Image 1 (cartoon, rainbow, N blue to C red):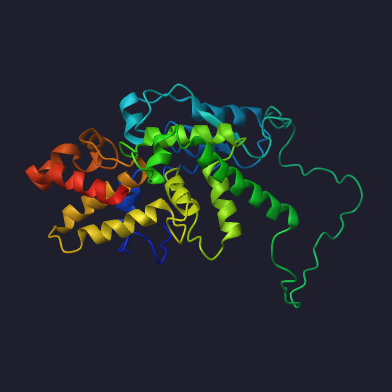
Image 2: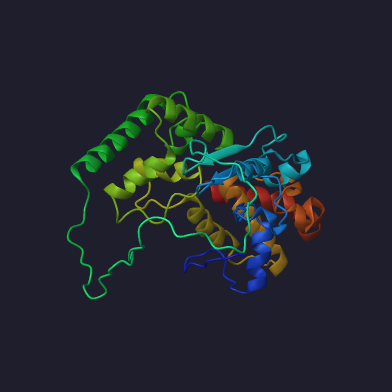
Length: 329
């Protein structure tokens, strides 16, 4: 079963079920496979890149079957269709959220004896385990705010980040561009953001984009709009930290606003606009769009590069260049 929740500020304006299903099938995110714990149902689970245990597993045989879902191989071309930067499936990731690996497991055994004979009672008489619930009293908020420990941690995170910016300005091109340093050359790329993120974690003892977002959200709750979504949100974080923006918005929200400004007044068909919206979403996470990207999801399932060229013709290169500069600037 697929549940697609719409928010008031959703980038998707159509609430028709067929439109939502189509976007779920063709867009890169979200890529989440939900599997029930009944392997014998006959459901075909596709090869997984990440296996998450969210409940205890008591049967060793059942546990091995779950692991088997992760070791299934996948054709490199099919893998690149959903994970564009992957060459081949060399491993899979297990997230053990409930301690399945440490728990004691037993082998399933056949029942013995006559199954129609009920077991004899054993032990003390059963007791009433019903809970007494208070359905009358109304819950009240006694206090709100942050503990001194959390406030101190927020201050340390923000200070460490500003210190990182000052000390690494000369070495990281992404910082020079985002901080509008005179003489900064080139443009923002995913590679430059990756180097920035790696340097940030090394410098600040594992500081991440998520922890920075949380810190600024706690310090400036009225200025942070939305939640952390993608690693490109570091762009928004740096601009907010340097005082270039008054609000801290997810990078995708900024891209959406710039897209609406760019497309207003331009004459595109509905199909052309749908393709441009997919290009917009790709740029929001990759900062660029190339012709080779149209061979990947979600474009590949709708006609790849041949289709987009059919829609825009010789104007395609100019449109993509102009749109990219507008959204990433």
